[in-house]
Length: 343
Image 1 (cartoon, rainbow, N blue to C red):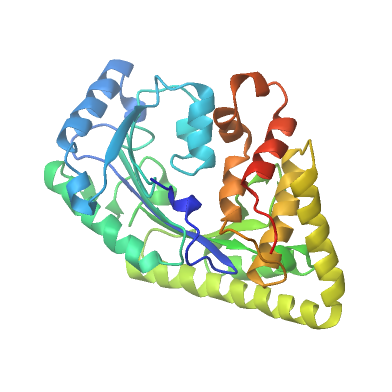
Image 2 (image 1 turned 135 degrees about the vertical axis):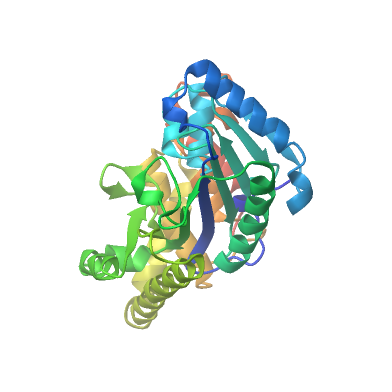
């Protein structure tokens, strides 16, 4: 079964992914950080047993992954694919993960919070994801009563999640906008509305591949519908700015843009070694060219799949063990294998 980031149908020029995440805790039960290792393990087992039939709600097959038993590379690969958060990948704990086969639904149990429920999609569809997450949330709550305060809403391990416990996020591909001098100012302006803009992949303050996630900062004193509407509006605003800049560039510097795109394709098609920054930069250029019709592939491909699967932990898991010693070589070979020829 294809994962959500591998789908080749209905790809959008700017919108790459949508995400809804809910965090919940059980009533009359301390936060996981206050539990001993054995207590945390028992909590995870109790939650697993109570949610063993949760696939019936969303008509998906789930597999259970013990994050405490998983190796560091596997946990980091799950984080790179955005199935778990940074906390779940960083340390060995007693958390369990219920992950649907297409990885659109992930439920982390006994992590920072008792339940971390996430729904993902490769489309711009926050409203549909919220409806699905809400159904799953109701199913869980029927079996495990949540800690809820009439004034403060859902109680969470971190104060930044108190209230709705909801994080709505949209991932955008912004190669033209992020390269402009005004991008930082634009991000600051949008931040005043209560949303954060951060790079999805990168090193430190540098973003690779021009992928940015827009998400709400406020969870208290707002409704779920207000959160989703705000994130949609800000994502649409950034997308409109990207399209405008791309249109202007195509009119005034079309040949230069085509030159960069085809050079990037040539490097990806024939390079024998690529570090992560190089690969992400060239893939970003090629994706922009494909979305604008400047180049066409003989076979359908999702460039964002390549961007995900060439991340350090994922490429380690995808290539033979003997190739792990040179990830730059393995990365280049993997791209050559999956990147189709041009028409």
